[in-house]
Image (cartoon, rainbow over all chains, first blue to last red; front, side, top):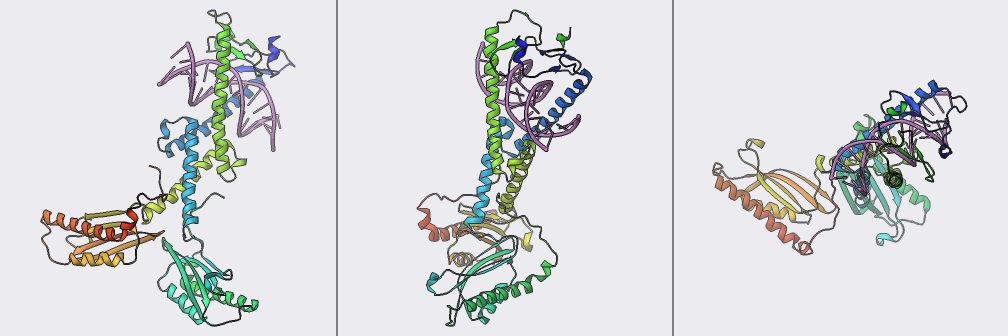
Length: 221
Length: 221
DNA sequence: ACTGACACGTGACAC
DNA sequence: TGTGTCACGTGTCAG
């Protein structure tokens, strides 16, 4: 009667020392169970579970060594602390990337029209440039823009680990017809090309080497 | 006979639905166990364990949402991934703080004698300066050092978010008796005072405001 | 004696 | 069919 309380139809019990198998508190003689099969089936099962636990606990121990004071922490408390530190570091990375201008690991030339009316000029172009810093690169860029009769009216720059991020706003020195979309496109394109030519000249030796190995400051997805 | 394989002296078994208690596969009638006590003892125990698991799994679920692609991960794999990301972010922070010179959030003036024989000079002073950057601050420092007949022979500087970190090595322009410990102490002290006076002049308006609010890039202990 | 934390063996479910 | 993962109840030890 009481035996029906057990949900499992056929329960064998493998004792703690794994020496012998005893009858579980179940309905015996049910369906003619093959004991030998079940025996090592259970053995394999418990052993697999044992290995699984070992892997998880191994990682948890690793986390213990990573988190300050984690040695003497509860398992749950440890995980909570891991979450805290993870978010903390993530916030740092986010701050570094969002709040400030930080040179990226990949070279980049972005040239786009500024929203009209900004900077008090009828038309302006915003440039975002990221590359390895080289002496003379900036003056070369300035020369190129001069040749296009363009003027830098605002610039913000950051360097980090030899790399450079340079955002600047440029306007045309000459009066032009900025209503002409075709002309604006050509202007943007020529700026892009000018910058590319400068970068190619300065960075060609590196690019041949292929991909870069530097670590990037990454935020989760 | 087979019952002796069980290590536990008195085993009660609480069934899955927590409706009724059945006899475990143990030696019954041993020592006259008080059943009622054991019943809710077991109930409390299993329930406590249930809550414990819930806490742990709750944190693990949180980690799942933090790690990209963690939703579909194995528990062990997830923890492994957590470790990877933790070390990755930690390495980023370490790189930012150790590998490069990054301005700290707190102002700092460090002046100390350089180990002898370095830089090819018999005596040199290493200065580490960290503060808000202000135009004219550097030339003021230079003037102050000039007044002390000191010369900057090497300098490394970084700026980040308006703050400045400036490490430089200075030597005395005049031949002095560097064996005199008292003189060396005075020299170091005067350099420190000179820098402090410059910073006080430039930063006094900010210091009145009190503590700063900026986040600092922190590494684990 | 009681509470909390851990490892274990086991049933169940999935591919 | 196995092979792997998970939650559960339990035994056990420490504070």
